[in-house]
Length: 290
Image 1 (tube, rainbow, N blue to C red):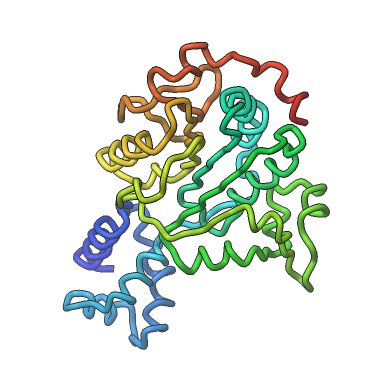
Image 2: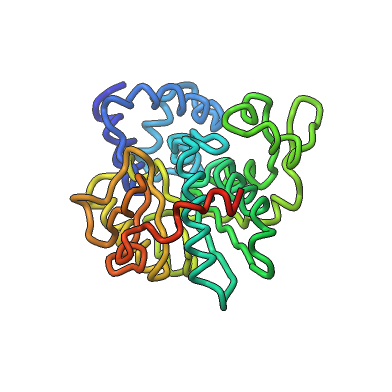
């Protein structure tokens, strides 16, 4: 691909989604955009690229951005964050919300739904420990196509074998020929919506827990800082932020501080969690919520 063509797609992706496409990912352009060119009737990828230099069709641009958005995910991906959610975070939230009895969770860049459904299954399992509580999961992504797939809640044998405990497969899924369909009660716990992390997050409301895992690695430092600072404004003062194992707030923003003793977990400065050293009740939580 010509350098000028690469620059065109790099700038388009940065402007519309904030994602940074490095030269080392240039190979993705051919593999992901050639099908888009065929869909729109262009004989070659070069022909579609030339069309983009004029006044491009808005729907074509959306298709290109969706195709270049990474959608890699799996149930209980990396596992450890979900253990921390179950064994540490739920304990804090239960103790800190005895009056409100509500837990609001946001999954940013939710892709095809495995992360929010994993959270929903954990909450379903812990429901007996939270009588009278209301759980709300807001799951967002920039791709309408992937959101429709998430809403459907149908997964291949390969997808359910990646990280999903067999007991959850048997309990919360039904087999539909060669596919597996998640139960309606789990689906009902998740509300999906299209959202670009560059946009105003105030429209989403406030949350107690935010999952933004394996997303920030695709942004430049300035955009990372902006996203984190705006997320901080939507998080309750004692709320918790989950980032991916390769992500950090250190050197990027002061809006969050690492949660003591828990990798990938962050709280806001002045949070009761940081003031108490992150140790309140964590030791015996696994037994209480198992």
